[in-house]
Length: 356
Ligand SMILES: *Cc1c(COP(=O)(O)O)cnc(C)c1O
Image (cartoon, rainbow, N blue to C red; front, side, top):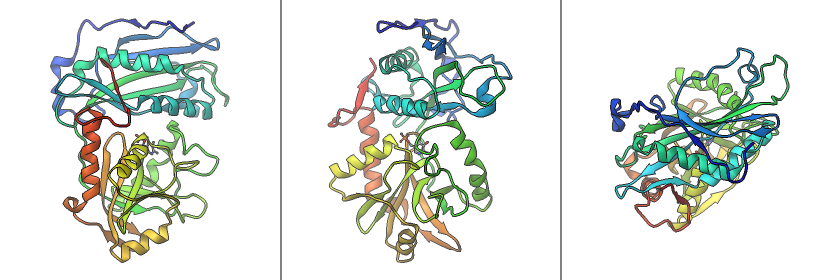
């Protein structure tokens, strides 16, 4: 069993793959760093954690997770700046959200100190994998899944918690064409939309595929009961700039509380931009679109930070938004945000945690 003074047993690889990789030229999510963190929950308690070489898992075909999807995850990043500082951004928020996801999915709470210690040890050990190019990072994937070998719908008694990482370059995407979805739903009241449980994402694949077949990159999700309110954009929170005001719906039952979202709201306030966090109706977005009053719209999440929206379609209409270079606030805040995460500007909110 683990104790407060638990130390992590570290088994280093004797064959690093780092030399084989062009760090500043990797495909997002396809290249994995040398090590992974593993901790099992057995007999009602967490067992000794280990960090070991990244490798395949062996599991029974009867593993509960494969059948009933009892699985949750997080997404965060580590950064390295020119001074050699290795940083995490608000990691306590990911840890807290992971434990909220765990609660909702009948999984055990992960001791916060141990989670943070595991993150830091892993990132420190694989620090050579953090690209130093401007705006590159190490993407970190903590996750937990049910490991009981049993066929029958019940909550597992055993679980595995793991963390691994991927070097990623700056994620500049072309502005995306989105469509306001009024048939399918991502989340519904009383469901799991406010936590990062695996099933949310598999259920969203089909509507996203239909939208892609119709020429869009991404969906804007609306509420499941009436399709009257805007919720999120794909797997990101969504922001609009209308009449000089930044607008985003409140996080809650059906809208995931993004850490990027929370930080952007604060950074907008710091820059003196009026921010309004309130329910946003499809009707007001369509009206503003028709009148050419939407001066900016973007998705917000850890992977891309800000993903600009090029156009918004609703039924037979399509609203083109201003050119990228005319998006004043989002371009400026994106830069401030990327600099802040790497301590290239002062961390006034105490958000950045140094690993070394
Ligand atoms: C992870 C996620 C976000 C963004 O959260 P961040 O903490 O900013 O990365 C937004 N919406 C959904 C549905 C998500 O899964």
